Image (cartoon, rainbow, N blue to C red; front, side, top):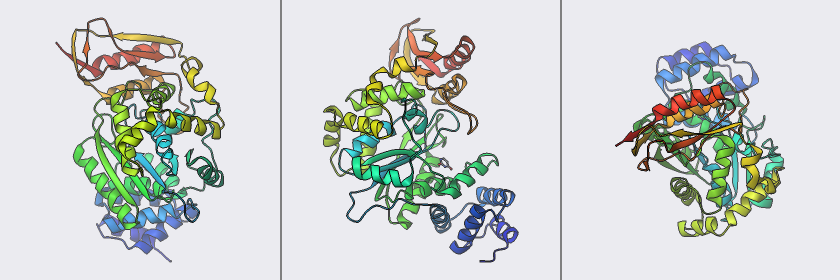
Length: 413
Ligand code: URA
């Protein structure tokens, strides 16, 4: 198709709806290098201001997912499911959820990202397990699915290359927070897993990408609409992210808390959210899911995952020692009273200061640092008793983090 790109950009800038074949030609041209970054970033900015309707968003999603390889499941395969979270502070749900759902007989081909922004992503957390390899080829992933029913991996070079290229461009051109671009980016990667069912955990609040419930609803509706166009059953749950999920923030610390959940324990809010999401995509009841957490099945499946990805399950009980930060100190409460707010956004920023997250895609994350024993809203604290523990590399980092945390906890007498 001979497309005049400046005219196409101008038409989107003026608010026209573009046909699917033109969107396809633009994405194909961008992936092949014929359409340069400067034209694509102008197009992304036009979309940011003028939006896209449901048909355009679906066409963009389809073009992006077909820019690379997709999972091909054999005839007669079990139900194939996954979940996606728009991300939040202390959100470690994928770690217990993937093995739990795999225990029900469904297949979970979970392709995840690294964290960019405040905290580490699922891959960063998994990599705090010694030897855990997330760089799996599509062929190996498909083999692993048929063997243990679950794979937890990163995006390969051949998986949604259009998204890989476009997301990096959006990151440096001020065009990340656009609903159609976010929708196409997330859904292209998830639908390239060739799913039957997908559950979305769309967060809103100070520690989330979407700051208001209204924006989260708009994003959820856009993603559900794309699912409908593509014949995939998509469920969306909207969840507040005003306080961190669970009681830990930081890569190895979050794996340790995920193991508690997989052993039938852990914080109540984490367990409830894992069950809420798993229930939407599992072929079994919530009661059966609870039993799979409580009887050790989900934990055994996680050990199988670790083994399949090159790690040693025997290391899991020793993670706290393996990744012990040089400085672990309590943050004392300034007053006695009830915790009425724990600002997830500030806790996220503090974890970034400690090195748990990354500012640039190429930054390394520190697996050992972060926070644990974080008190939750509604809990009572005595003056001088800990609000949480800070795991830091050195005193300077510790002091920067504790200054932010002092503002994050609000205590009412
Ligand atoms: N996560 C993604 O994968 N893509 C976006 O555009 C935003 C969040």
